[in-house]
Length: 75
Image 1 (cartoon, one colour):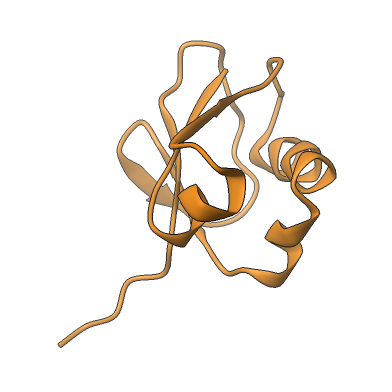
Image 2: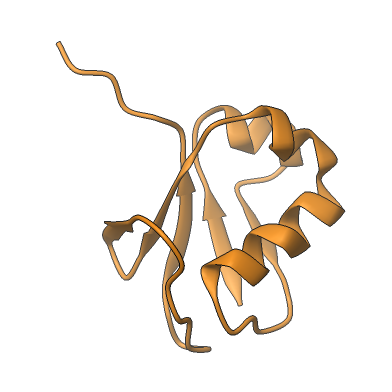
């Protein structure tokens, strides 16, 4: 799975995407990413699956497009 990163998350990982083995859910994906990048625990971010910001545990498929986004602020 290829995970696109944006904003301060690029600085955290040192690149704009990471590749991980397939994960069954967003919860499992986050667990794996926090293991690889422990600093993620201290950052807020949103998860988008197939261009839709999700909330809560979501099932993942190998072909899904996944992105981690910094929180948005309105204005």
